[in-house]
Image (spheres, rainbow, N blue to C red):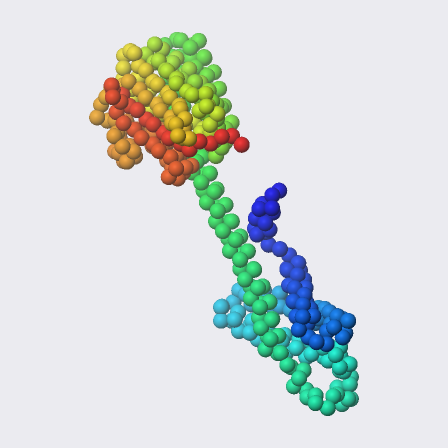
Length: 379
């Protein structure tokens, strides 16, 4: 674990109350030890034993502020005014108790005057009891600082926890949306394939129907075995696509020809699972199925300027139903169908604005769909 990761983890994890409590009062003792050592002329004469009453004073302060944890915890759910009044009252009360104890400790250390001496009236001539409450305002602000730190730290980690819960809720919603969009693909494709198998059975072509069912089972197993939230290598995506195309070639035979142009570098990159299948299915439905022969689908993948460019093109009829923009695809297009709209929605959920999707008519007929994604390598 790096130093940066260590401090990141420290910042995300709420420390123990006792850890912060002890460290805070230890810091108080340290600061006053340095102050007395540097500026009090009597410190050197005492052999720097001034540390002893300061330690005891810090211990008393720690004991007196310890119950505030429960008191503040009880009143923190009240109205803001009630919380503020509680803080002020408790700070005054603790300061009124702590200040005389601190001053008695210092009087004993420097003047050897004890509480019993004061009770008997054996105090110094220039002493008056108001001296026991000297620096009470300072003590008040010390307790106020402790109180502010207590509420500040607790509210910080409360907000951090709420932020984590919000992010987790957003992530779960994100995952649910991805799964919903991903699983819309299977029923759509399944209906078309089962309809084709039914036709083969009615024709008596049981061997082809059985082969088609076997390929369908393999494809669906691949689909269900892959987590919709996880991205897969383009190489594995193309393998799944070939399973799908094997099924469709059974339906269209010589009417369907598929050309692949995939860079080796592109095969290693990550893409959402079943990203290309809806594009190819759309091309088959609206292009190949409308042609009597010579239907061609081209699938290209290349890396340009650190971006993955994916293209699916067909040579189908160049009708006006082919959308000329993504906005038209999502709102009006008949050519897009469920598949392309599903792809656009999945890309939006997964990549926000960090992707490109375009659809246009081909220069020599047909439709061209292009997706540009950021390069992602497997971990």
